[in-house]
Image 1 (cartoon, rainbow, N blue to C red):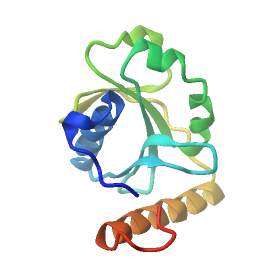
Image 2: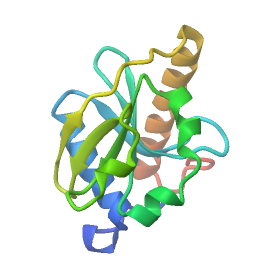
Image 3: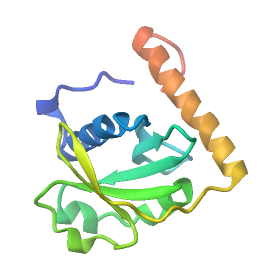
Image 4: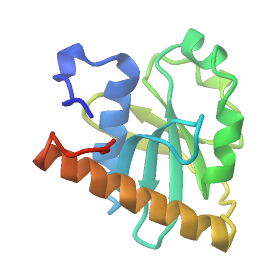
Length: 152
């Protein structure tokens, strides 16, 4: 795993993710950026709430970024609630009305539309919680020991 680049070298979506994670932390959520719930899927932000709920946040920096992404519907099965995070200039009328909406920048965010909850099945929640915990622990281990074998 590579060290996080300074903000001036991050992509716009990464900066949105940073602001989202900062905001969700104030609500007692633990966040992982670029989390992989299964092979072939990479979520911009996976947040685990204080009651064990999972929120998925997809960060979109432009109209082109949104319209070129056909994978997001496959992310719904991994979330109790699904959100889009965009900046103040994003044309929010493009986004599905049933999903959540977060307005963000590199420093913070605001949840402006809360989606309806679609609770995960208990078996999926358990498997996802274990995968989330392992990913977080492995990321912490590699920050402490960059030479750790097999860490991601």
